[in-house]
Length: 99
Image (cartoon, rainbow, N blue to C red; front, side, top):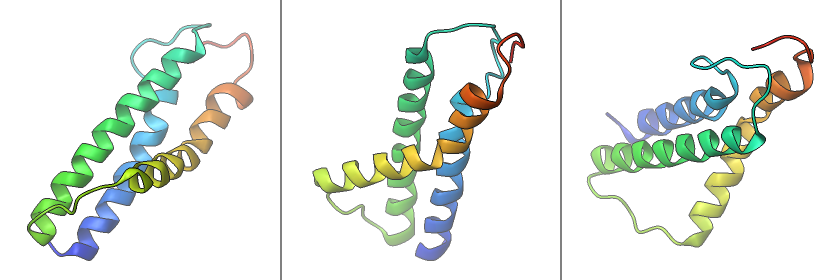
């Protein structure tokens, strides 16, 4: 796998994982605390970073060391990619509908 293919795969995986906690595929309920969405988002972020590090090490041979800037920018990117899921879950769903 080339480095360009690994980068595209990582971005597609980020877009899917960022919106996954807001779909409520497992336990649809009428009400749940917002920290559950944030916890799922944080777990998906950790999963995405682990997959990205694995892709980086297989595509170019060795993963580069990461400083705090990488984590700050990647978490901001992940938050931006989660925007459609947040809008769908918290702004477009009607109050009486469980989903």
